[in-house]
Amino acid sequence: MRILFCLDVKLKKFKDKYFTSGAADYQYFNNQKIFKNDILNVICRSDDENFSTKMSVSSGKNVNFTTINSYFSLLNPKFKNELKEMINNSDLCLIKLPTIIGCFACHYVKKMKKRYVIEMVGDPYYSLKYRGDLISKIMAPIIKSINKYYIKRAAAVIYVSKKYLQDRYPTKGKSFTLSDVSLIKCNESIIEKRYKRIKKYNKMVVYKFGIIGSLNVRYKGLDTALFMINELKRNNINVELHILGTGNRSYWDKIIESLNISNNVLYDGVIEHEEIFDWFDKIDFFLMPSLTEGLPRSLIEAMSRGCLCIASNVGGIPELLETNSLVNPKDYMSMKNIVLNMIENIDDSVKQSKRNIDISNDFQIERLRLQKKKINEIILKEIINYEDLTCSK
Image (cartoon, rainbow, N blue to C red; front, side, top):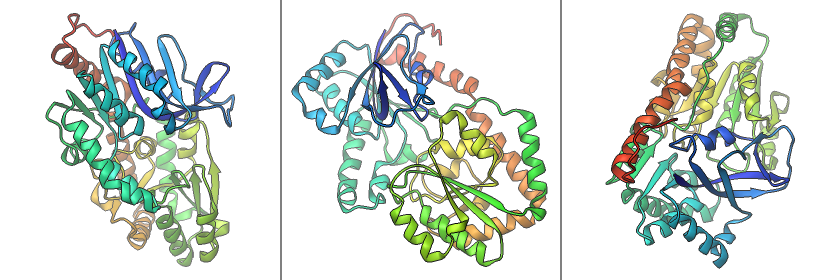
């Protein structure tokens, strides 16, 4: 079976192979197949800048890539013809939204009267509204309407959330819930180290906080985290904030300097996705004070390592954390108070760590494979009318 998969991920090309510094490795693409021997044709972005030998390989057997360097390439007549040919030759069109490539693909799939399945992973309206620039703010309601239009008319939509995205972007087609995060069960020795670490909180020399996100956007709430770090410092608590992500630091450096917390903030840059769990193991608190989220991968990964997590009550986050770990966006004072409470009430913090691990177990790869198999069987039977319903995945 031939599957067309459209998304906006940017890969790195080196010697006719594609690589990723994130989660989009070969296994990720291979998981998009229904049958083991399916041909997956991927349309996404790529460039050849800043390649590293530490990156994970995205290329592999029966996974083919057609990539663009910029979104302007979508307007190229040659690319349009190639896209239409790929759509026409595909048994299933799988489109990831919200993405620009995804919306472009939806236009031609619908125009060619082909049925399509959408993977809905985030809320484009709030992502653009809080991006930090005027053009994005103007485009937010337009992009929201475009996404709603194609989602409503899709044959099926696979949402990463249980409720939030379904309410915001409903469909007339089949509706499923399946996370795009898949985890391997954490080693018991690592979990025990986490509990021992929490039990020593009243003797800690320095408390380490972590936050993940691009430095080029504002909606990840890094400013809220910085203000909270400043408040903890004013309470004579020794803290470090580790920032994982790339981008222009100048805006954030001005805030850091104005708060006089330069010695408390460390830029950790970018690490390979395989190393992310080691990074989580070195921090005490994971922060996600975002203005918008879908069902965030990094939060689930942090929970799987028993990190104490504090986040804003937006998007699908309340589906993961209890109310005593949630704050309103930009409310750094409440975030500070939660941290102080977690430090003072160690037994409750250990329980919270255990709960986070329990919740993250729902995202273990074997459980998700069973869920995906059931979804695939429905897609085969009711959407593409494929005769062989035995999924070999």
